[in-house]
Length: 107
View 1 (cartoon, rainbow, N blue to C red):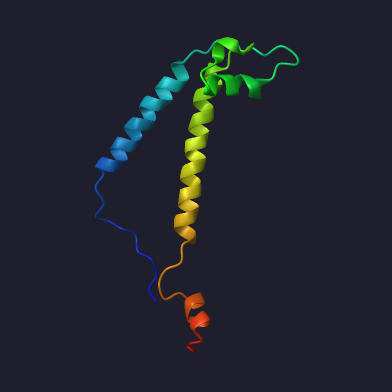
View 2: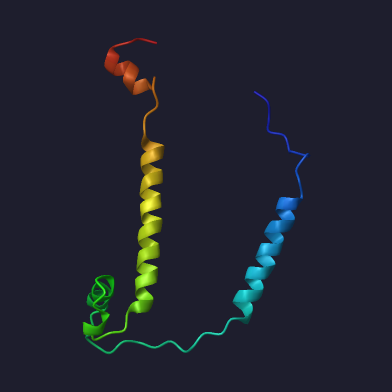
């Protein structure tokens, strides 16, 4: 078995693009201004407000939760992608050890 070697024939364009992207994102985040945080009144059901927004009944909700709807859907997409990735990684390949044990083969 040989030890890993450092690759010396890499193209520096990817590194330059990554650094440029980092510089742009850092400039955007450092110069962004956000309004002061506003809370909800006591006893307000944020979950119910998100439910009203999901079913396009936001005019009936006592809360304004449209901002939560985007983050709620994005988190759902990310969790779905993670679940799909976990299923893909957990899938057995043909000729795995468990298949040989079930067939009664000895190795």
